[in-house]
Image 1 (spheres, helix red, strand yellow):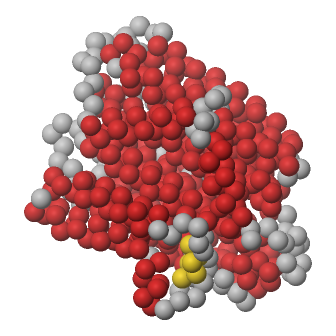
Image 2: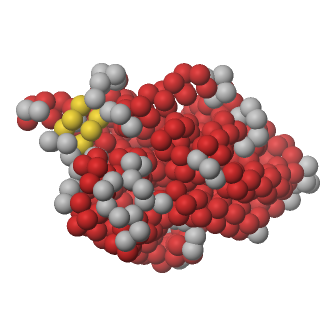
Image 3: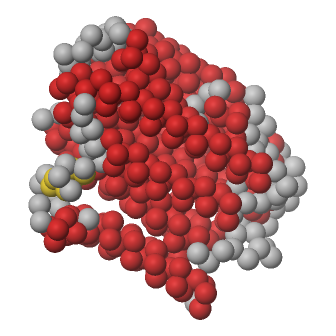
Length: 476
């Protein structure tokens, strides 16, 4: 493509970059307008993306590919980023002076996520993920709270550095084996390589380990102990939605383009990681007394479920992954949103202090319960359809034992979530709470997320068609 054509192809990213620059400028002179400007930039990016549907664009000699898979992921990323920003103003404590530049770093992180979803070459994959990661590090530093926040931020930085190191070494080994940096070309070259040689297994292990670090899977999660408490929830929500979706999108493209056409036994390795992640995540969630930590460890279990889709990439796996990521983004926002609002009101995120929530804030209580039931995978909510498809992918891929573990984990997770629901609706209030007055932004974010959770089943036909379109573009 010509240089001008490359610039036009990056028009959604250019909207985000321009919005970030405007936010940084206004942060000094008109700090109260930065969130609105960031939301306008996200809307502009979505409208620019809408002009690129139904076509595949190769950018910078194949470094980026804007295909159906990238477009579907970009829609999820932009929607999750917009809902997070809408809810962000409610996560400001009385007397706290938030950094007005924070929405700009949200935009730059989203820019990195969009680039990562389109990255089709090893260098562009690494640089895009680093752009996302660096801005997340800045956000954790700018918005830290409490004495333990600095150590949590440093732990998060250490995990990110380890993830980058493992990933770049794994990609370097793939390049050494194939002589190619393009993911698809490397996959064709790997098809003729002995799948049992040590270098191949080491490369796969390093890449899988790098993404495990980036997703915060166990035992890596303990490195960032305190992250969910010391960092404001608006950043945690962004990490659990935009950050997780971007990481899975990159891993999905990498696995489909580079490994799915080879004889390398990557599904078996991923199946073991998935089983361990979902089981350990749910068991640890059961032991938590903080609703923040419960949701954080539940996120590990959800990542384990998403990994099940990688056992059958050639058939339903990619479609299942995309549907699951939509459900995961909605439920993460629907679960953390009420916690943002209610925890600020009662100055506590302890599960026992949610007693009486249904009396003082029935709307928040209902939203939280819907999100928890969706995380548990109960029909007909969003999480049910996502889990159903990844279970089907595991069975179709020949890993019925993994599907059995998945169903057992759904029951285990439901037990933990019912404990929270019982506290919200049945336990006697610990103290009297003034009814929560919700900011308009978080009201809209929670409302939209709840509508998506409830009505995703009605929209399953169009959503699955879009996911199948993304799958076809990726596996053409």
